[in-house]
Length: 286
Image (cartoon, rainbow, N blue to C red; front, side, top):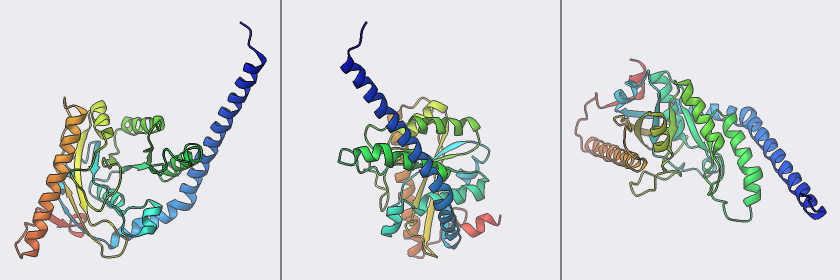
C-alpha cells in the first residue's frame, strides 16, 4: 500500500508535535519536581512546625490507634484557608494537622493525595497551557513534596495516580489521606458531592476506611483552635461504590454533629468526659 506525499507530511508533522508535547511535559514535570524539592519543601517544613503552636483537641483517637499496624484510607472533609495567600499556594493546614497526628500517635507516614492541576481552567483558552505545562508542573511539584498527585480537570488521565497509589499500597505500611469532597470549603456540608475514587480504591484493595472530621484548621496562626474527631473504621466488603460513598457521607455528618454537641455542652458548662476528648499534649505524653 503506497502512502501519498501529503499524508507522509502530515504523519511527520503529527509525530513532531507529539514528540514536542512529550518533551515539554517531561521538562515541566522535572521542573515542578525540582521546585517542590528545593524551593517549596523548606517552606512547607516551616509551616509544619507551626502546627506545634496549634491548640488541638482530639476525640476518637482510639479508632486511629487500633489501626497502628494496618494500612488504611483516611477520609476527611477539606477546609479552605482563611488567608488568600494560603489559598493561592494550595497550603491548607488540615492535611498537615492530620499528617502530624498520624505520625505521632501511630508512628506512620501519611501519604497525602494532592490536586496537581488548578481544577478551574478546563474548557477555556488555557487548555493547552494546562495540559502541557500546568498539569506536568503540578504533578512534578506534588511528587517533589512527597504527595500523591491527582488531576481534577474534566477529561484528565490519572495513570500516574493509579500507579503511585498501587505502589504505596503494595508497600503495605503507609495510610493514604483522601479528601472526597474534591474541593475545600469553610466546613463540611452533607450536600456536597463526594468523589467515588476512594470507594473504588477501597473495593479494589479491600482496605479499611477511617473517617475523620476536622474543624478550625483554616489558619496557620499560633494558638489556632482545631478539633479533630476520628470515627469508627469500616471495611467496604461487598458494598458498591455508591454505598461506600454514602457511608463516608453519613459518618462525616455524624462526626460533625457529635462534635457540635460537645462544643455546645462545653459552652453551657456541661462536662465532657476526658476519655472522649483529649488535648494533643496529653495524648503524646502517654
